[in-house]
Length: 52
View 1 (tube, helix red, strand yellow):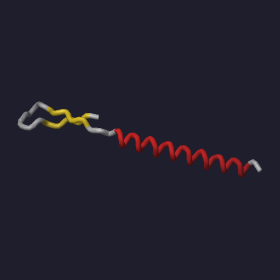
View 2: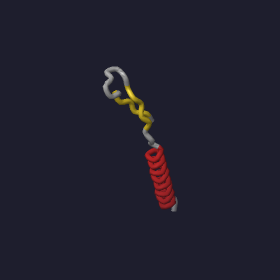
View 3: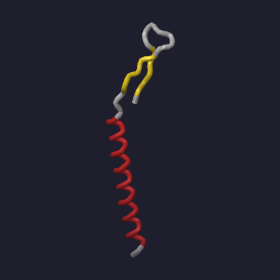
């Protein structure tokens, strides 16, 4: 991801600074997978109780 900020001393010029967001994306992916697994497990327990 890149962030543009005004260049020092210039009125119409910008500097581009790269920002590393890999850790945030990986953390969100892991959290999503854990939530999905938990929902599937809970759904499986709920269905097994109603079929008896």
